[in-house]
Each structure stands twice: as C-alpha cells, then as structure tokens.
Image 1 (cartoon, helix red, strand yellow):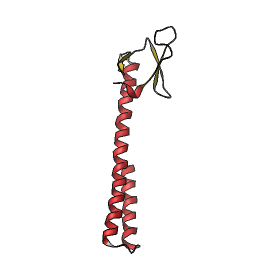
Image 2 (tube, helix red, strand yellow):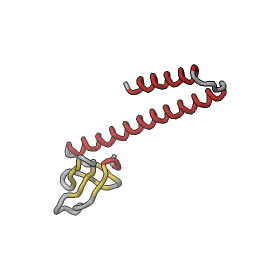
Image 3 (cartoon, helix red, strand yellow):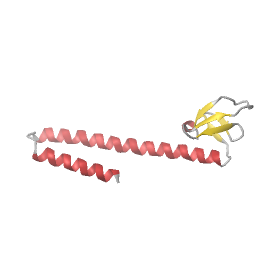
Image 4 (cartoon, helix red, strand yellow):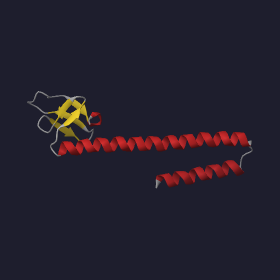
Length: 109
C-alpha cells in the first residue's frame, strides 16, 4: 500500500514539474532521473531490510523451538543462553561457561 501512495506522490511531482516550471526538457529529464533513483533506492533498502528482519526472526523462532543455532561459529542453545527480545540478543546464562557473553541474533544463521 505504501508503494501505491509513493507512486501517487511521484505522479503529482511529475505533474507539477510539467505544468508549473519553466525547465528545459533536458533539465526535467535530469530531475526525473534523480527522483526515480531516490525512489528505487528506497524500495531496494526496504526490501533488504525486510529480508534481514525475516532472517533474524527465523533464527529467534529456531531458538525458541530449542534448536541449536550457529552464530559467528558459536553454538547457541536454550541451555546456555537466554533471549533478550527487546534487542534480539542472546545473553549467556549464569553458572554456565557462556555467562555474560552477548551475541546479536542478526549475526546468526
């Protein structure tokens, strides 16, 4: 839905550019290419961010299912770590060799 709203705004921008400016055709082409590059960059960033979030949530789901996860070559499991949901960080439990160790869920596979 946000993409549709974005396209409508870009459409209004182009209408304003066409009717209310005295730019040459070349200048309008440059402005249009610049705006299009910004919009495509925003879409690419949004897609990348969504994929990273899905990957991290998949790792958290596996952890909650008592599965062992690899994070930077370290095995993370429920017996040695707890999950801080606010930051999605695995924190080593007390009385374990992993005590005090913090691993971001975004670094896991």
